[in-house]
Image (cartoon, rainbow, N blue to C red; front, side):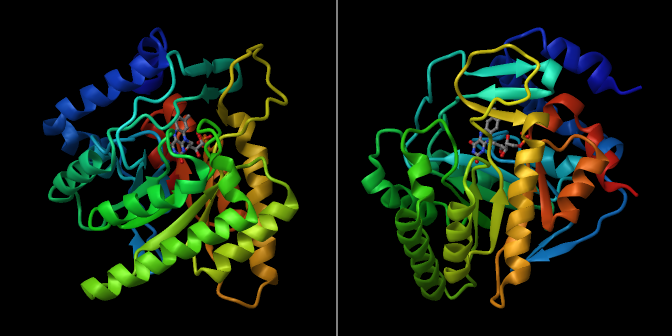
Length: 345
Ligand SMILES: Cc1cc2nc3c(=O)[nH]c(=O)nc-3n(C[C@H](O)[C@H](O)[C@H](O)COP(=O)(O)O)c2cc1C
């Protein structure tokens, strides 16, 4: 019997989605003594390590950004058998995010809409949480940090917010994801434009080089997370800028602002995730893969995210060129049983 789907999910789905999420995270952090049980119950048997840049991931599945925004349950994601968790999005200063309610379930569509707006405890607090967790997690568990800008920071000054997060969290993160694709922070998407993105990524790369040579350590891996709602021209320019700046990977994709094909009648702003974004994310992933194949340079690796629920969804992302796959909404609907389901052969 799948306890999550038959008991836990029906209970959680009776309460407001954000409260349910917080309740679940709160319970998880209180169950630390039971983590070995979760490990034996849910962790995959077949690990198939993959190297991305200098980092080795013990398997190809990770928990996507936004699930553990503050890094409060990192040990649990390790125990469940994910290869990595992407903490955040983290901003330099703590911020409350948008007004409630701001997450909506669309069960008929196996989807969510959210307009959280980067609610998080800020770089200093999240750094402390990660450093604390580092002492407890397995050596081969990768902790990424997804960074963004505060709502109050104008787009013209956005670079400073990213570099501040990068510097503050340097020793906490195994890799960084530069998030320019959340639809819920005004102006953020503009950072995907050629001029803005080139400046942002070159400044972060330069900072990466200077900190690593100062500390005499290797560079951090940097990923860029992009939206599914971009045209081919923008995608092409993003790919070229990432290649020129030796960005380690491109994460495709964040949530969509599109609403096509929904069965649910709902009029709520925000990013749509889950099954309805699968096709769109795959389209972007596939196009990036074509660009990789056509290039003679060292190009970014691809990380596929969006609408993964089943083993065949997972395999499709790999087929389209993803080296890693991340899940969020599928994990809400399917629960921890999906990890073995996707990874065991
Ligand atoms: C409630 C919620 C909050 C999210 N928060 C973030 C975030 O803070 N940063 C980010 O990069 N992506 C965030 N995402 C996007 C997910 O990481 C993922 O890219 C997207 O939901 C598509 O994957 P999925 O269909 O598996 O959910 C969030 C998604 C959801 C549903």
